[in-house]
Image (cartoon, rainbow, N blue to C red; front, top):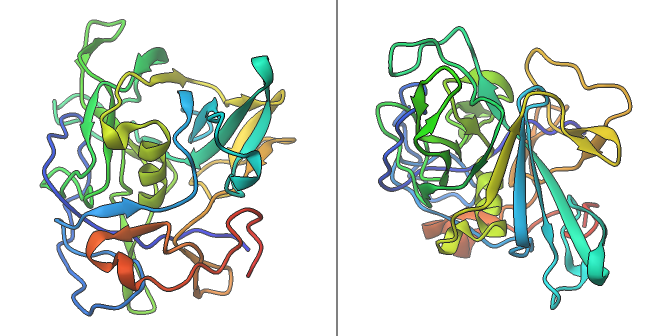
Length: 298
């Protein structure tokens, strides 16, 4: 089943220079229903999934593939069998285990204009590192950040042409979509953003946890590459639709998880709502419907 839609919401204060988006839709859901859906611009979110915080994590952003690839060492006190179904592992030196996960992202639409008035453009390929941000970026006039983490990885970088750039980050999905009368956060994967890398809300929560960003860790390497990323000598992709793009032949495809997904049948399907929830609703989330270790239906 192709999964293309999420349900996650809004919160807090953040300076988001360099990541303009559409004006936020301030419609709110006050029904108290259990499903994870778009709420107000000042919601807060929590991650309760089983992805551990990794040791020596690294990130690779593929501009051509619209992916961010997370890799890091499994902590010695964590069993491989406890990992979630959407990761891949390989042996690492010293008897360690390297954990890999990949997530869909948005990249830049070069037809847009940046806040500076200059044409929007992707971050140039370079070795950056997580340098700033917040766990709860509120929706503001520049974009509907939805209260999700804003993981900034470009701070005062001088491009090859002398342009200094800041405020480029991984953050929430910006867009929303009404399905069956319910307003959900929605990621349009592909070249649609002004500079940043939009992610599904639940994915940016998991990423923040896996690199320790959620408790103040900064400095995680974040490498931007122009071409497809690689895994096991194959192009890397994720199981999520993309705009104006075709999956390369022979790609290594990573599974993803969603809190709520839209299936080919046009219906919303609860998957892992207990892994990522708006703080005031966590106690009332419906049960997960997938096995956390295999991804199969329970």
